[in-house]
Length: 580
Figure 1 (cartoon, rainbow, N blue to C red):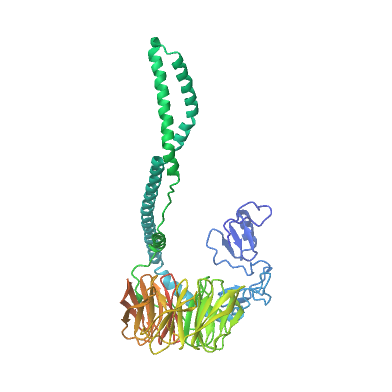
Figure 2 (cartoon, rainbow, N blue to C red):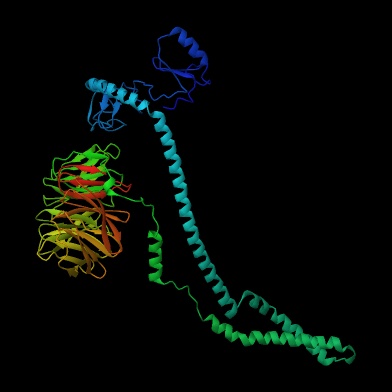
């Protein structure tokens, strides 16, 4: 609460600033009232308003419509006190905010908090010994951070100033060329305005010429010759317009256009969009430590994703989907709608959360804070569904153990079965490589991947002897516009998706199978069955191992996710999720 600008609670002094607050009376007091109040109530607890009020407690709920009800409950999920309205089953009128949380009566946690108080006091006493050094260090860190921030902004401004200068110079050059072309070869406003005066000049020339012919006077020869020159000059000007008329007319039929090289322009726009970014320097996975370990699943963690609101989502062998609080990483919501392991989760552009499972289904959920609604169930596969992706046109594709992938078209905010393609063998993964093309893998003896034309609905190309993919565990990832990276058995394959050819295979020591993969800056982070997280540097069409984290988990690491803030998240067969 903002108490620094409070006025005295007394009607007589309501315009005077309060200097204290009585916790017992729940009144704000000015200087005069405080003196009187202290004389009458010596044992009341007064708090001076110019001090830190974070410890000032009023035992009533301040939320609207909660009628200042006493705080008698404790929400374990949000670590706050709440009133009966807060935990009310009725979730409207501002009630029931913590009904679905793990809450208890304050009497039930008094011993726990009492014991923790001693622990907190001991820690505070220990911290108080070094607090001055910590504060000074914080100031130094803040100064260095502010300096780095301003230097970074300066570099960005200098770079874009140079680019703007080049673009402005090119613009000025083209504009000058346009002026030069039209001024030299075309009619100008000056020529047109000059021609508008010709009828009058012709009339005057004829009048003066006729008079001069009839009345030639040798005695006024200079004047007469001046009239002759006037007529001759006007005649020249008329002839010039007449003679150039066809030239101007012909020139007007020649059209000039601003030619834009489409390929160069597209490449330039793409380059401008990608040529600069803010990256973390010297990323090194070996130096990373888990800042948090989540133990909420009872089975293998198969998939991870982030929702648009920043919350982490996981899917597991235990059939559950968990959505975590983005601050505490405690579960906000647990979804148990599948009856088999959850292999893939993705949030669609519509906001719906889509999941697929060994139970042969795809399910779409509408997530509202700590609640969910099952919006649609798709069951067109006959066996486990390993992967789902959303295409750029918002249609869905799923691939399955039943040797097929299916395309679902979006109609009236629902997904309808559109097309099924048989794949001979188990279809284990799929990725969109172009606007109208996907790449998928099948579990066959030749380790084949296929490129499928979404418009013509047929296979466009195939490649054999690619990295052997590991069932449902592998993830394809684009490392550039034309390069696809595929992890698999003991190696990584780099594929050119424009030329449909294998660029190279990269052997990975220690690992039997490679599973999870994500990108941070110019690094590929790869995991597998050896419980290690390996960092590879991308250089053109090649990768080089630069660092690795040993014993990151106690089992296979199936999935990796880039948090976008220098951290990564990993999920493992040891049932845990770690944030690095």
